[in-house]
Length: 427
Image (cartoon, rainbow, N blue to C red):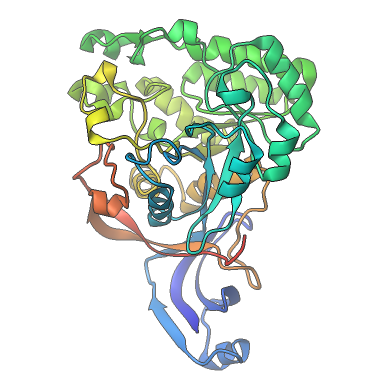
């Protein structure tokens, strides 16, 4: 069976094209793309197909599948929060065809067998891209056998939390270089974050929330950049959250340092101004930035200082999050929400073009992971999504495709919905 998608707006960041077109799919591949496909033309392209389903997609967006750099799986270890199957369904609901998984499971992903199991293709599920631990148990003390994790299918290496030992950091960068896998590091000085819960500034003082100073990020970042400059080893900087951090990365790139950097999606939509409700769903680590931080992060993507947007999806049970703001575990769901909310906030307001959004959520994450990016092109496997910007829906557990519901947008009405996702049989 084939599918004809008629008069859809095709977004392809790899070729920098944005056009109104017809797209024909057969046998899981893209058979033809044209401004208008006449029946005679597509019959020639589908000699082996006897039935064609037509999708009238005027006003909809067709784009490559989205790629999440890093999120958290609750399985194994915390299946009561969310199973791996739940996470996969949430990813498809949000248009993600590949999902990076940090080694924050229980036990952490520091053994080749764990990596190999997660890397196995799953039917009707996004491709899972496990990050292998940098250190045993993600404890920041002893290096893992990175070569074995790489051979088992690790997409890259990260503990998913700060590494405080500078000598160990230098050793792991030297060792990982030969494996040609990305190393993702989170610049954060835990001695400076202390018991903080909100970004230090006017709003944290007004609300009486213990503050996390920006220097907790920038001091660690400056030390990391010095290490990169000394060794010349490439690094991916994850979870950038401050305006000063953006400045430091911009200066480092101008000096030619081999770095990429990402920001999590909620830091682009929210700031300390949103904390007046003391909603524990707004507790993140790093914490939400000030309005100036938020503006700098958005501008950092626009001028290519920052490379990509990550989801950092993290599920918690109702009981875990139903506590005071400062006591709440950090993190929120995001795989089903990132695309519609970023579209609603930054594309509908004409701050970004659809091409920009797809670049930050698909093309650039693939490049940061050193993977071939998906592309909606003739003769390519169909790894893509159909998005209806006008569709309205209410955020519920059912729509989130997860037993967890830890999101500040719960029960709110959103505009923009993924209508369909196509996955290659094997990626």
